[in-house]
Image 1 (spheres, rainbow, N blue to C red):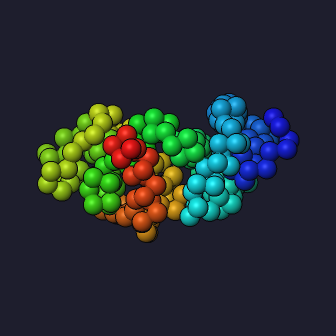
Image 2: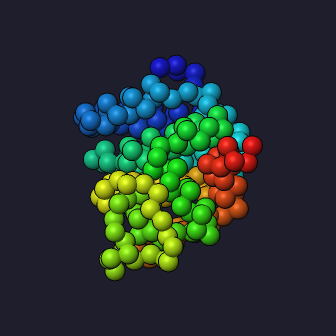
Length: 201
């Protein structure tokens, strides 16, 4: 690892890895090591230059912070998604997003820039939402992917948190099924440019 790297996000990754090692969290050590190995400080810095309304220092603090048992404020998979989103924005490359983030972004943009938590789950999963009060959604709402309901639930939560960390929402609730985080102008512009790049070019 290059000790001269000073990008706040990269520094946060190294700090989180050190905490995982200190607390003997073997699986997280492996996951964080993989993230760092695949992360370019240059791309993170380029993303920081482009993401002018995102507080990278605040994100770095969230990603690095752990409690006295080594548990982090943010899940390792959320950290991975933050890095992937930054890389995708740095490269202006929609394919850099994972499918979960791509479909969460698309569904939100296609539905008035705001979807409920349960609509987010439905957008990612094969749940028969028209037959279930639990997953009831607005008329005409479409599934964009066919992941399991469990995967759709966990992944949609992580995607919303990534967008929240990056400052893409007007407000952000606690994740109750009827919470409906709405993209702000910055989030709309950033995600629209990324996921519709091939259309808008």
